[in-house]
Structures are given as C-alpha cells and as structure tokens.
Amino acid sequence: MKNNILVIGGMGKTGRKVVEQLKTQNYPVRIGSRRASIPFDWNDETTWGKALEGIEKMYITYQPDLAVPGALDSIEALIKQAKRSGVKKAVLLSGKGEREAELCEQVVIHSGMDYTIVRASWFMQNFSESFFLDPIIAGHVALPKAEAKVPYVNTDDIAAVVVAALTNEEHNGQLYELTGPRVLTFEEVVQEIAKQADREIQFTPISMDAYVNMLKQANVPDDYIWLINYLFTEVLDAKGNNMITGDIEKVLGRKPKDFSQYAKETASTGVWNSVASGVL
Image 1 (tube, rainbow, N blue to C red):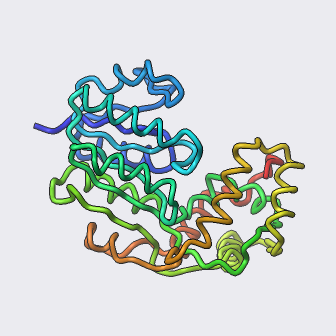
Image 2: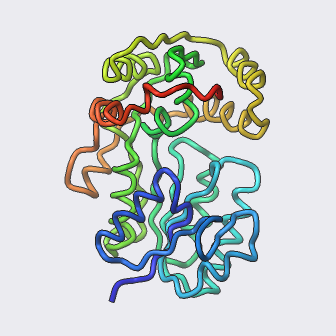
C-alpha cells in the first residue's frame, strides 16, 4: 500500500515537480497550498490539521526561505501538529550555507519522526522563475558579489532526490547536500544564457549598497530586500558553499544536470525573450 503524501508548497519551484513525479509513480498526493482544495497556509495554523489529516509522509518547503524571521517557530509548530496527526516522516528542503535554516533542520532531526534533510545550493531556475528573470529579459543584469562561484542545482534534480527520500526508507536519517556539477560566477551564467537565448545581455558588477538601493527604487518589499541582502552577504560567503558534492549521483545513480543543459532547455521555451514586466 502506497503512503499518502502531503507536498507543502506543491505549486512552487520544487514542489510542483515533486507532485508530478509522485503522481507518475501512482502515489496518493495532497498539494499543500493556499489555493488547494484542502488549503494549507503557513500564516494560518488553523488550516494545518485538515491538510495533515490521513497523511503519512510530508515534504516541507517554507516560503520565502527558512532564514527569515518566524520560520523556526513555524517549523516547530508544524512538526508538533504533524506528530499529533500521525505523520511518520518529514523531508525538509533546506538551504546550503544558511545557519538559520540549520536550526530548522534540527527541529526535524530531533522530532522523533523519520526524516531526510535536503540542503540545496542556489537554484538554476532562479534565472527563469524568480528574481533574476526580469533583468535578463531587459538585457542588463547588475549584481553584487560578481566574484562568487556557485554550484547551481537544477530543481528537476532536487525533486527527484526528494521523491526518492519520500518513497524509499533507505534515505531515512540522511542529510544530502545538492549541487550542480560545476561552479559559475554571475557573469558566466549571464554569458551562457545570452548564448543559448541568442541575444545580447550585459552584466555589470555593482556594490551591495547599490543593489539594495536599486531594489528599493523598484518598490521591492522590505522583507524581500532583507532576504536578498541575507542571501548575498551571508550565504554566498559561507564557508564551503562553493564546494561541489556527489550527493545527487549518490541518490539517483546519475550525474546532476549541468547549467548548459538547463540554459538550452529553458531558452527553447522563449522565457528569456519575453517582454520585461518592469520588476527587478
């Protein structure tokens, strides 16, 4: 008998792919989202009990990030509710190099439930589904920390590891750090995207202060600016955050997707040749 699985963030970058893969394998899946038929809202604990009813395993993604203030309290409360509801296993999506996220990991690790921790490097999809997209469409990307080298990981690979962790007991008690097969600077990323999209895209290194001011001028919300500032100043500089791991190959028995493959696949969708929406 296959377990009932709740995917919190089941319409998000990794969650929707986890849902697709689980459904392909005929697992009963419940999407945890404010828009789902049985809603789950991180900001409304009264929705949690119903969403967790009858669930045996769950995948946890926290929006916008486990590093933000309040995330730890929410994870603690969710784990308590999940245990009361009879959930047996939790798979947590965490961030590589995020000290605050590691506190959330500890809550899951010491919950008494079976668990798998999935620590991911920065997503390749940040350049096609998130905050780097509009500057790419506009043809001019200005970012701080130009020298930072990041082993970007594909959300397809993250989802595949999560599905393996949810459906195979051999991954219980494991902590996996997921990276792509090589490190890239922001300029190298932009060059690769420009090549695959067959268009001109400029890259300009700027200071962190200049970037924050640019976000403010674009009327980006303060909490979002706080998170971006944290990711650039704390996470990119975290010791060992540019290290490549073999955990994807260890779990899946194949190498992770390379950024070039991601860029080629994404360019074919035309997303980088769309009309800019005017939001940084």
